[in-house]
Image (cartoon, rainbow, N blue to C red; front, side, top):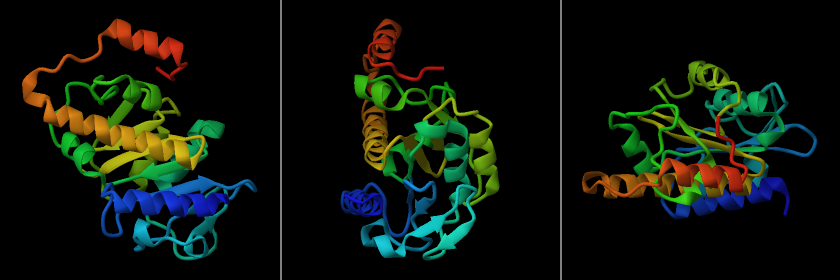
Length: 212
């Protein structure tokens, strides 16, 4: 399947399952020729077509298609700092992850609780970033400041941003982040038995997880 077709298919799936709503959220993928296909502004992920995607060059300059999302700076920051580890970006306004970001965090560098092995395996350490105005270049600056150390960040009061080598992998990881956030909220008052540091260490070693 063409990369643009796959992006649209996954966008439809995310929308239909309520992981984003209205015209919120944006996706991008680095195409084989080095250009970047990104979702256009004001278009629901449930109504994407390959023809209405925006095409940018590697520096984020507009080439063709519809006007791109205002969140281009955050996408570029991941592509530019993570190199070939970032072939696609998924940014959602998913409910549980956003809700969890509204609660004071004990840890910002490793924000997502260690509740299941899959959150560790697919995301590594998720960095919580403070609130920024949507579309602000400051979001890109903050992500660039992480120097590629995190595959995923959580924008407080806004939503998660997840990078991976493929759009499929980035989508699955974003879904895992949302599922873990839901578990964290559901068990918040129950003092859940999280994974121990030793168990996390074993996962990181066994599955070659980025953990810096």
